[in-house]
Image (cartoon, rainbow, N blue to C red; front, side):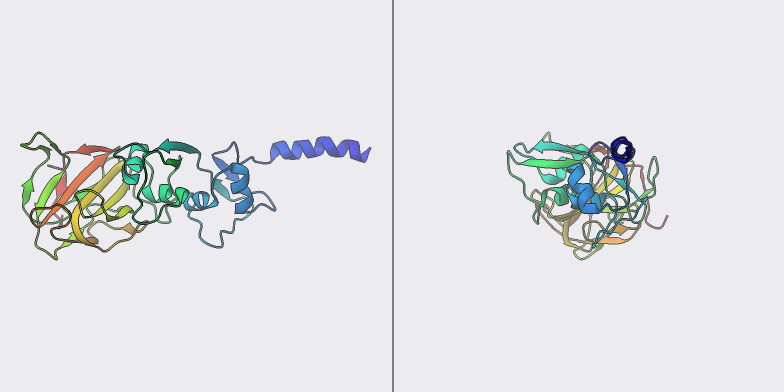
Length: 259
């Protein structure tokens, strides 16, 4: 009789328990570990850890609610970069790097299949969520080239600002560093900051970085050293603002750094 009762009771317990394979959030049960949850969810442990701000030894506690990032797969096409793919999906670059084991210089190959986690990482320090962030000038130099179209018919997604070699470049608004390395294109060293709600800023033609991937910076904090990086023809800073991956004209949106 006891055995007859045990089976339905066990079934009820299993139904009541959370199933990471079908959840986007999972409440940790007694006896569960991050390894076990990751295996059941079919999501790399490192991705779940990053999404929840967990660090080694990755201990979880009973009752803790974990975000379980759902995944998609993206096949790399000609001309695509890991950063561009991250911006297309609206996900932080470091999560894609972690999920796919990418190492510097984070190169991807045509035809390579990348795991795209569906949720961004939880912030140890929350990014201030504003519909429209308060942007300040990253440098006080003269605008050399504005937003719009070039004489050769090409587009210009931001503004170019005159600098002196060695000048400091500062964060236009508070946010998380989601890209900080030598760009494979024209920008030399490039920094990308995520400000929440789909807003990002990019800082190109740097000659040195002073921030690292995943770091949180405050508005006005130094993020790099200006110069003639990449394909720049003169010392300059390329700065642009993106909303949901699309360039926005910075003209009129930038307050002076002292404001």
